[in-house]
Image: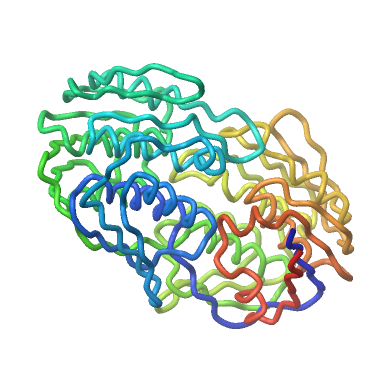
Length: 418
């Protein structure tokens, strides 16, 4: 099993290219199933999760190829399968998007209930309630959701919570239903908007993209298309917090400032200098770090996927800060590992109190989930001595060529293959 060796103390300097967004690429890949023919997705990141989704599509009969420029072509002319198996879906929750895509294309599906990260229950009830409202008959069979969508129809459905996954899955299903479907309280994340834009390019009529209310007029004759995956706002945010703690100055090439409004505002409040540059964002510390409280919220609020990285940043702030996660209250498995590096963090229910500044020191630590892993890397970059991070397969799910990118910025990071 691979481990990451980080020798801390180096500032970060230079440019880094932000990869395509994992959380956009995966549902866009699922969307290719809706139309016969060859769709092309540009700027797809090289990640373990992308490889897993490609295997899901291949299992369903699609042909998937990647070129040297990072474009992924998916030929869904003959999707022979309708089953997304447990051994694939259990490793990545986004595989569950196959349910909406198969309902839309095949009008039937058999998809395993998902697994995913090691923290917290993340139920799919909203997905299933929405499908029910659209006339889809569902049953559970040995851990699989079995769908009969032969009588699917348009409907009005209000999501109990603006779930990104449910919003995407219902969009995929509705895209081939000619009668109007109205979805309210949908997620406004850029990744959901990216799916809506792709479905529009395929021939569906969608009003309200980017808002919390979508009106969809689907088409039974969707066509393949070519789209470019939006930049990964969480990867950009991770590098932003890394330079904030480690010091230096970097430019995030390709980052989209409009997708990072809340994070940038908090970073500036914390004493970082953030400037919108040509083709990206320039970031550097501007004096000592100031403690800033954050509370996670649905987009455009502070992303729960940046909570762990912000905690790492606040270990260098001069004073106490409070980080509250209202989305996933138990998402604090990284705290115990940060404490091993010298952080002073207390947890009470869904609130972390971070006391800084502290002198972080290298130690062996263990990754517990994707964003927790990123927080350990950030802390290790600023720590004195050497940090050994194990179970980094979590990082490979969401960060493209992390050690190479950090190395290009001057960090001393090495992957030891096990």
